[in-house]
Length: 547
Ligand SMILES: *[C@@H]1O[C@H](CO)[C@@H](O)[C@H](O)[C@H]1NC(C)=O
Ligand SMILES: *[C@@H]1O[C@H](CO)[C@@H](O)[C@H](O)[C@H]1NC(C)=O
Image 1 (cartoon, rainbow, N blue to C red):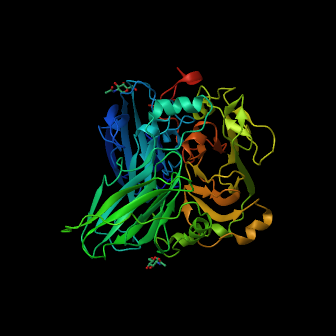
Image 2: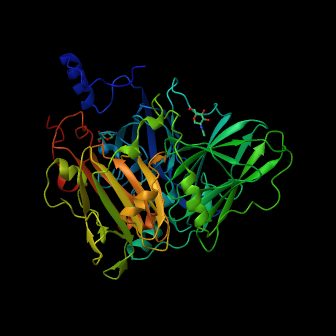
Image 3: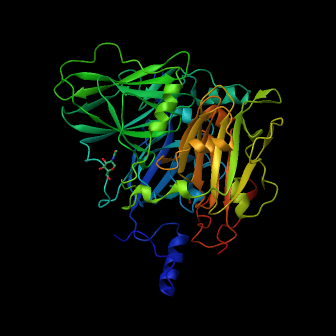
């Protein structure tokens, strides 16, 4: 199967063709899928009350994206809102192409009444992800949707094809609407406790998933909420875990699964119970008040509705969550996006060149609630960092604007960019001294979650790392007064957002950008600025085609 460009070929013609193809930021003969998305306000009633939602093509949640590994997705987004708008792609790695990431550090917002066409390639990826609106608390109003990346036809998937493939976008929800929530944050407060939980935009028993007795189904569950971890379970059924954000897992069976903010899981569920209806349950995790919502697992021909109480799940207990997290492991012999086994990449045998330690905090700065990493609370610049970098515009940011380990100093506001070299292999320790569970996401990469531990991380904590078969994923939790360690191969040049997936924290500064740099200007390492790039701030009026 010919799916990769041979960029190292010495054939002049091939090199020229390759360069031409790079100019349009798409790759060789990999197929294209085209999407036209109209983003509008619209009335939604997720908790029974009318609210202003943000719809894509009239839908809440937005349309589902189905793609096969390596396909190119050409997505034209028309912003019919009265606010600037951007979409970002949780877990899509955008190889060599942070230009398409859709966060405020990489892209100018699409102004009201304007459009922008994203050119993504789901290069070397499989699995379950989602997209979301990245600006202005829009995520509290909708405009998110699921992304399923299917394996190429001849690449083995380590389980028989399921009889159905269901998506559940679950998460906490507030009745206040995105504008009021934005005001709350801007006035220097955390978000209020959510009003409820939604599954696919609906509340209690709002969705029905129909199954045939005896058959097995895949459920892909993402936590698209703003503030809380959730627990997922199905009355009378077990969950066989098969995939986590692109990694095929050991197929352990669970009675319930914790899904932290921004995470995605696939489980297989066999309809092996008497023909009737069962509750599918999602509840908040680690919250004193527990919110719950349900959908219905409906057996075909069932005439017995759901009954009994929805099965309870774990609530405040942390130990069981840590225990479960450690059981989530890679199936070393299964294929991932490529035919060779996932385990042929021996992440644990590579020695990291350095350790970055990131400590979250919740300081007050100028009398307002902010959130910070290593005492730096991210301040949004007037010009996207990626454009400032590309056009060498001084004064927007400086590399090193955030320390690589906690200083213990007073928190301050800064447009935080950390520098790293292309091909570095780094250990990152997320150190959490706060009482709440953190959820961290890195754009542009999947990373190996090598360890969870309590208290302060120390070099001897490495003795308990899983250097053999942890999963590669894009979002990890960090338990209260605990640490999580990851290994990541910085093999993707670009300006990459590292952020809290807790939306108040992200909005109020618990994020920064990692600039993965190479002095080479080779198109093999990074694509040039796209022809259609929107320009704003100090990049307005620049010429985007210097080649
Ligand atoms: C989309 O935006 C481009 C400019 O970026 C403009 O030329 C084009 O007319 C727009 N298309 C539509 C249908 O509005
Ligand atoms: C791992 O994947 C293989 C397919 O390569 C499958 O046969 C096996 O059952 C899986 N093992 C576990 C423990 O899930």
